[in-house]
Amino acid sequence: MIKALKMNQRITKCIILFYVFACIPLHGQENYSKLTKEALETMWEAKDTVGYRKSFDMYERAFSLFPDSIDETGLYKASVLASDLKENDKAFKYLTLLFELKPNLPWEPNWSYILGDESENEYKNLLSDVRWNELKQKALKAKLTFYEELNVNEKEFYASNKVPLYKVKDGKTLYKEIRKKNGYLSKKRQNYSISFAINDSVKTSFFVHIPKNYSPNKSYPLLFFLHGAVRYNQLSDYQLASWVLYDWNRYYTKYAEQNDVILVFPKGSGKFNWMTSDDGFFMIPKIVALVKKALNVDDDKVFISGHSNGATGSFSYLMKQPTLFAGFYGFNTYPKVFTGGTFVENIKNRSFINFSTDEDYYYPPNANDDFTQLMNSINADYKEYRYNGFPHSFPQFDESEPAYGILFADLLKRQRNPFPKEISWEFDDECYGDIDWLSNIKLDTLAVRKDWHKVKNFKINRWLKYDEKDSLVVMEVDRMAFDFPRKSGKIIAKYENNIFRIETSCVKSFSVNISPEMIDTGKKVRIYLNGKLCFNKRIGYNTNFMLQNFNINQDRIQVWINQVNIQ
Image 1 (cartoon, one colour):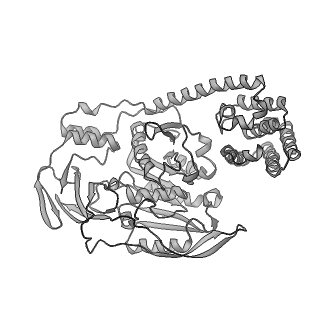
Image 2: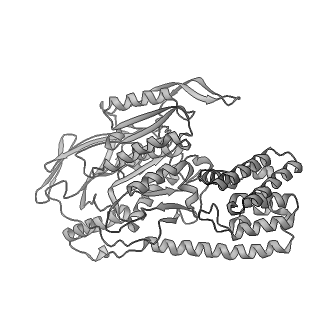
Image 3: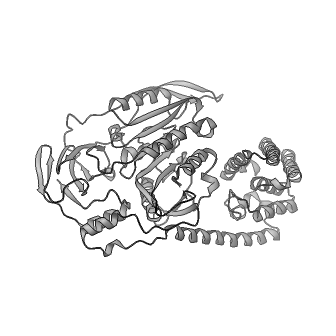
């Protein structure tokens, strides 16, 4: 049973929690941590009950020597070991202490140790004892209270005092009302776990960490962190601070708190994520809108970062759906779109900073060199910072801290240009036919590609991998950096003095979104498509369109008053 327990996700969480406690500079805690670490290692190495007994005795010795340092992880391990050794009295003793423990930084809700998916397997020798049912009833009540508190906190998070916009009938007045940053309320907490419906039957959560002295009268930068290992993650109804604010993410927390940046941590899975499937790609833009309903976010300072698969996710939003964001970052990035073509010139609409290492099996340094060269050839706003001597798990090392300093320094000075004078956009999926003031772009897959509509790619001939001795070796490969499974369309557009000039390749139709920040609404707007005049009229305010668009993205800066549909 305990061997199976080693594969349990809860074990992984407890190891991470152990790391957090081991970093606390207290003499007693350090000694307790050393003893419980040795006990944990002994349990892992155990081949029979003799080894498990030795591990259990080590935990009990740690509890006896350092009673003020007893923690969640130690009690959990001791209770499971005692159950397996059929020492039921001690198992219930430690399990009860675990249930009643109120740590400042809980790693799991107390009820989950009794009601979790693995609990009946972990405590199978206790199930026939009347004390198990008594503890289970207490756990059920605690679980109910836990979810009630989550619901109360979520309602408080979304609470606002905003004027309903649908009551405003005049277009110019509505525009001014949308642009106002008011109606936000103070928040009672710094951390919120918010539920998120993926569809009618599936839900997950996102965790929000706000500045300590958050003021509803001030606009704040917002940074998303996308986790990696998407194929091995599971959706979760809730998240705890101990899961997302520490360990590998400790420097996000540190620098966000120093610089008054809102942090958001979404929870994805193998099916619903930001890299391997489009089923979950909608989540991040949707969460942006939800957070903006609750918090005073600076619309021109919304960013995405991530590690590994999360960094690839960050890069994918840059390639496919960057409108809501000002900039993108990635640690140990694989710069490729895995659900379609990778159209690298799309980066020219925003920016990307990649923090790479030279011992990364996920994406090799030679490929990063060639990718950087490609970025430089198109004058992209792209930077790579290489850290030599580190593996793929770079964020776990203290030496990674300077990279976070670079990230937050860029974040603080960078702002989105909500109304860029020029746009270049390529896509192969009409779900992603939107970029700033161009939207609803549709493909013409039968059209002939224009001469200026070219493919950009490069070959990768070396990759890093771990051999059977767990050593990193170089292997020869023959692969292209990007795949192009579908035909793409491309559009290049610019405007000045009420004149829009747009060139298209393999595009059937599109819409031009209009803002009074872009044009003089008192004059006609002329739109030239592939050199021919196709629109020459004044543009007024469309209140229905304005409300519909704002309700989707909650953007109070990039506000469109109307759109022109071009065939």
